[in-house]
Image (cartoon, rainbow, N blue to C red; front, side, top):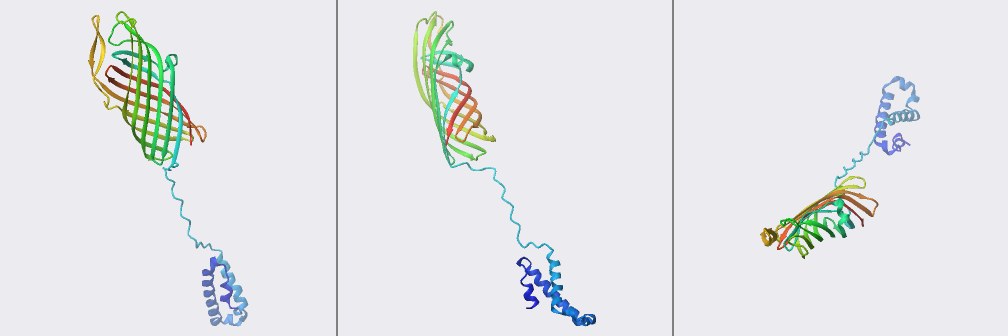
Length: 329
């Protein structure tokens, strides 16, 4: 067996290096044996057995060097800030809005000045019902919510001195929207949406005072406002997110000629006033993902009406703390 055959059996990781050392060492040894008288006198140095030992030692010394013939693995790609959420999402919620009622509320020309703070709403409240739905597919969203309240109060009549009324108010709205997420990430989202808000108001007034004692007025009306808005959500820490919505509607879509009853001397007259139809809403707060399926929201909600049409006036603001719980799947 030749020396070349022996050294070609070295490990593959050092095969190229061993072959080069083998060739160079044999050449050096042959030159030494041919030219050096001392080497010729010591003929055993040129014997193949000693040559093998000499070359093996050379390869062993060379093998102590580190050779890495494999390329280093590429670094992992940086993680994207925007991780897309699951394709679908559904939510059902039961909101509780302890909203006070401030502003002008009028039926058939008689306008009362309401001032029921949210801290007193439970004393005046006769009935409340509310609900919300939400669905998303990729970036598209459909959501709706609504509330109905009935409360009783006594209030002065605007424009008619020394007169007041006991009033039973019914107020309701139901709104539905189609939205599109401009930003669609698990950490944050921003949606543009448009839809409509159905509004209903009813008043039952029993009048007190010198001119109107014992009289009774009642009436109701409803209307639909176009609405556009923005909604956002930012994940701030583990199960906690910050959310906010703002929208505006009406755009004078239902503004008609209007009137209001006013006092002139000892007479009650019908005075023309400017009709209008606007509304806007701001709400926001914190959301807690209690479990995988249960969530709750804590925040504040403000809804302002500026509606005057025919003999009806609703220039009230619903304003107060908001809490909602629900399930998602």
